[in-house]
Amino acid sequence: MRADRLIQALLLLQARARITAAELAAELEVSVPTARRDLAALATSGVPVYPSRGRGGGWRLVGGARTDLTGLTEGELVSLLIGLSQDAGAEPERVTAVRKLVRAAPAPFRASAERVAGATMRDVAWGAVRDPAEAQTVGHLQRAIAAGRRVYLRYTGARAQSSSEVVPLVVGSRGSHWYLLGAPVSDDSGAADAERLRTYRVDRIESLEVLPLRGSAPDGFDAQHEWQRMVERVEDLRGTVRATVRVLPWAVRPLCAHFAAHARILEADADAAGRTLVEVRAHRIDALAEQLSGWANVVEVEGPQEVRRALRDLGRRLVAQYDD
Image (cartoon, rainbow, N blue to C red; front, side, top):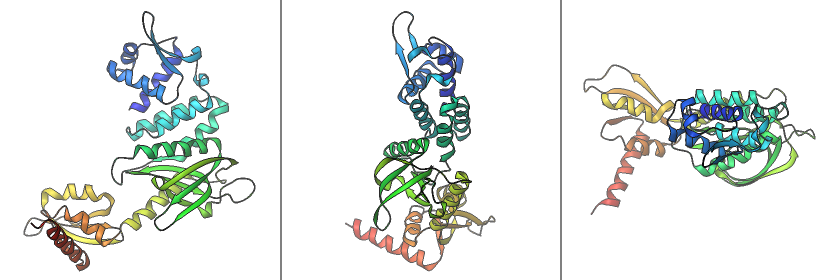
């Protein structure tokens, strides 16, 4: 909802010489403090808006641009899109706001706006709250996408460090992290080679430089499709180890919510003790055991034996560490 309000606030600013926080609050049907925060968020995003105090004061756009989005430079428009695309607000409202902004963009800037909007994915959660440091790197990648440029990055993967010159094609968040889908160029045209598409976790990018070299998506590239392929591939890797567990009735829903896509109910009918049979998955035996250890009071692991042994070993290590 907030992302949609920011667009409405911007359009109101462009339609009037000035607007006060109280007037904006009445227009948007929010509180005055909320209206002030929205105006400050616009200024932080790079929109040329500033407050003036005293009689006749209020918020104004620099230069008095009051007709459409032509009062924004290309860089300011891209900054606002980046802020909206990284907004943690409700997904439908955020998407609507981004679409409105792209449609309202001046023709010379529309291609850049469309590249940012089309290449940014916000998906269902895998985990915890995002690291703000990642958002800054994502912003650089989004600006490179807007400008149609390549990037040079130093990256620490699971096994080794590498350096790459790639065309950034998709950035997306999945729970606690942002991810980049990028590929090297295929020829002198600067088009990316989709056959060499690679996934990078943004928090593992040690340094990033936007290059003056052209870099674009290949013809027919479907950002949404490639993002879904990446998600499915990673989900498969994360769920290669399986265990069946008996869960107390009141804990079935929170357990399934914790494991999300990696949990499914095998038997809806409870056993004689009132427990439900559930399958849970993780990418490694020790990772699955560590997660299940937090549910020890409400879950009994039936199998496999490897997971039961991992839980037993984990328990012994905890006893040894904390035994007085």
